[in-house]
Length: 505
Image (tube, rainbow, N blue to C red):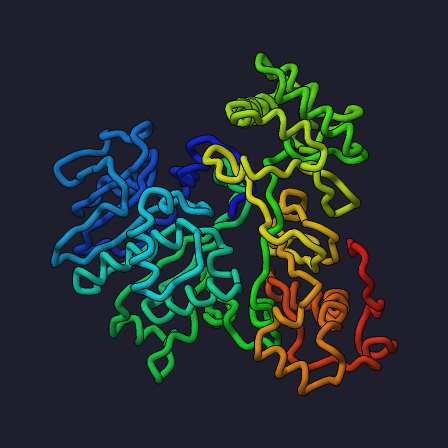
């Protein structure tokens, strides 16, 4: 979910991104702590605990990482536990108030340590298909509150995308939140204020058991449904903020039964450089993997081709802290790969170097099943590499559009981010029944034309307006069908370029 995802340090593995003290103090100043038992489920370096240390409330803090766990905040009112939040339970008649910055990570670290617990939670609350740690933290928090009578609040720092993702599974999660909670308010935060965070965040405040005061706040309808939420002091429609409102569009998950995540080669190391041939890339990689005594200095030289690097970070001075840190991480990837049995033979096999479509041309990446199940760095493989339509799978408000066709696979690790692919051949078998009905009710064109139609929509002013309005807009098409004659005329839509099976930048 975060830009610094492909690192193997503990902060990435555990999803640790700490809230600066001045932000903690600002956020807690607006919370009513009266008669509440305060629980910080992942206190990290203790910045939130420090911000409430002078309150008379009883407090409990939990931190999984023993390397940063500290008892400096322990007193007669504060109990600290060096344990996993998913192992935590409590029985009390007090109001529970959860405060903090849950870990953000996909796939969640808990899926390797508490898979059964997560499975029970997601089934119990019918929130399936998500692998994000912050979602699981919220589910467990709500479960604890519900098991203690259902009275409590959540005040968590979270990625904005958690509430803006309009994929099928996240839509279900947001509907679950609307059913279970009263949205007290949402405060926008700048990710740049957090070390290692490259996306914007929010401070989400939820009341798990809406009370008479909440309903009387003017944010609820007479039917008992919350209509509005206060965002940065302004009253906005809740469904609009959560991207749940009917905006006359058909989202991608209602078009396709299944999409695939483009492969994720380990950053820089397993991706070729612009202008580098397959053979040059293979030679460079083999020199790296075969060198059992490789140093950061030799690695720095071998990560470039004709003086160019794949990663922008290496445009900084060689002796800068950012470059040294990145080299150290990539060197650890190299050592990890070198530990695999007979791995050099795989690197010597030219057929393992696959052509890949990137934003501006063709690159190559080293594709090897031996590296797929690797706990020390991200290396995922698209299970269905074939001629596909692709689109941005993790858009941001600032990302450029990214649509086109690829002959084999589409790399997620090149700007602007994650990509989703949909096989072109046999696409009629991958369309939902509801979309097929919609298509057949509007046109006699064959279902094989769906990809061309989608490519056309991606270039229209309608799509651009939707992207501007929704900030983080996952691919969709308008519910009003655009007839063929109108698509290839000069009326109503711009730009009018007939789609073809080529890369569209």
